Image (cartoon, rainbow over all chains, first blue to last red):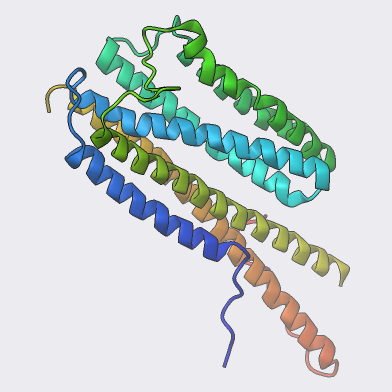
Length: 234
Length: 69
């Protein structure tokens, strides 16, 4: 009797989170397109809100995870936290690009233009995207321990741009970009809010699932390097 | 399609197209690494067996298949 291939740590978590994300995405898609009521002001276009805002928040969560991973790396010098930080920023950047694209589509449908340079939310969010894109330029310019150390510091410093984007609309009192969530609660009926919550949960589960899959790949790469070293030593 | 529904469909399609592309890239990388790890493990097993049986005829050592790391 032969044993099957050994599972990498995290494989089970990746499968579980992948399943949860898939289920939530299916449920939220049904809810957004078939159940949620149509907005009286914007009509069907408002449905972009459910996934546009959910992905935006998930991207900011990804950057927050990278910031925490950066702090933990500097405290422990454990490579695992460098992996978590880089994977989180990679996924956060993917989500940010999706936010910009879906936002532009929504802007075109709603305002008749793809981009409004005078809107503080759009511009500050673009700055956040560019800051995190530069993270990969930094990583490619250093090696080994220095690369991980610089990346951790950059992930922590870069996170300072996130509140800038989040509070820009409130500070600048933009009338172009609507503010849905205020200190007084959500400016939408409960029948819409429930589907936004489901959509948000789906995007966060998707982030965790992608992160787990990415980390399994990185652990496999490390295992491969260890095997290569064993071969060189024999 | 009317009333801007084409914009909603376009936004939704863009999201899942890019997420799916990312998943495919991740999956391809993981599968490639897994194949390489298994190929190297097999090479090491054969090497260990030869060391345990030094009198046996040495067989040619195959190169690991697949891409380089």
